[in-house]
Every structure is written in structure tokens, then in C-alpha cells.
Image 1: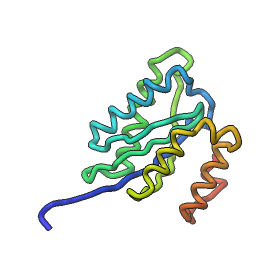
Image 2: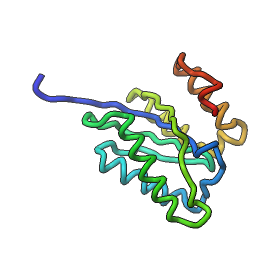
Image 3: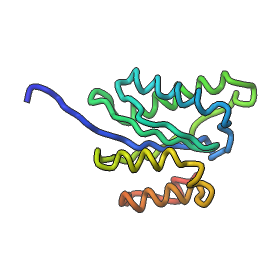
Length: 151
């Protein structure tokens, strides 16, 4: 085959350091746009981004030319630098070290988009931790270590 083809959709989730509830509603749209711009530069366009005060969900199409870990690192690094410029209360802002990334088949894109759009509704009855544990169970993640993951 002389051409490389790829269609890899990723549902990425990560939180603020120590899951601090510090992402403000008034900064959401700008933060999401900034993240989308970084992903676009990495040839990994965002389909949807939504966030809660302590975590972010991103659905994007991963470029065939970039490793997932490198894309995640760049998005987190660049947005962390940018958030620190917003106001004095964000001077020490950072994201958690880890992340969760789940593959999404083309046939499930609409379902995942609907889920990400409805974050506020989900979190009326579900904590971030419960949400992540639900994803890990649904996706058969077996290397999950509760003691390490939630530090």
C-alpha cells in the first residue's frame, strides 16, 4: 500500500491537578476554542470539547502523523500556559499528570457527542470519579489501579 490511511477517533478525559474545581464557566468557550486550535495545528481536529469545573472531555480525530501521548501533552502544556495568563488566581494552575483516552468507532460518534454535550446533566447525579470508573468498566480497562490513578 503506498498511501497511509487512518480514521482514529479518541474520547479524551483529564482533570485539573488534584481535581480542583477551578475551571470557570465564563472561560469555557474561550478555553474550548483554544484547545481546538491546538488540535487543529496538530492535524487532529476536535469534533467536540466540553468541560466541568474539574475536568475536560475532548472528542477528536487523531492524526496519522502524531502519537496520542504527544498530542495530549501538547494540548495540556499549551492550555496550562494560557490559563495562567487569564487572572492572578490561575498563576499556579496545572492539569493532572495522567489522562484517559478511549477509542470511538465511527458508528458510536453521535452517542459520544451527545454524552459530552450533556456533561452538566450527567454530573448532577454522577461524580467525576464515578464517571471515570464507569468508562473504565465499559471499556474493559484492566490495568486500572485505584490507589495510583486517584492520587
